[in-house]
Length: 144
Picture 1 (tube, rainbow, N blue to C red):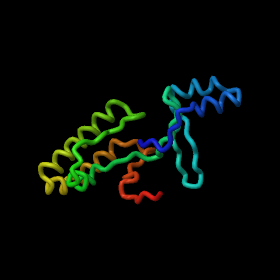
Picture 2 (cartoon, rainbow, N blue to C red):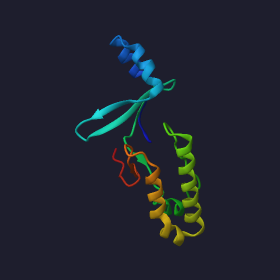
Picture 3 (cartoon, rainbow, N blue to C red):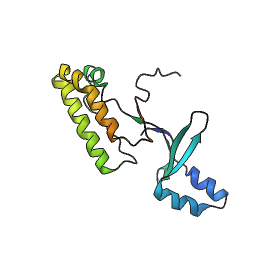
């Protein structure tokens, strides 16, 4: 899950406090089940607040397990698997898949090319149906 927006300010708390509903924020904060709805694109963006501020997350999870060749060839030698809002079991299984994929991409690129589609399928099987996988901004040009 990728953080799309972050503010150090407690925006949700301020909003609900203004509405006279501060207790509602405290209750929902523990459940982390608040969403911004984009009806035009039919997306739900998870939004939560903690001691670091307010966070709006991507509606999809990033997965590049089948795109590691370019990164390895570019000399990338470490990856971060972000497990925010995920269970320990999910993180463990995804980490195992990435470990296998990275080792293959480095040690046996031909074997990696043969197995990468299967590794992606395994990652998709672990994924909750309401959180599709995509490549995030990996292939998108940054425009300033």
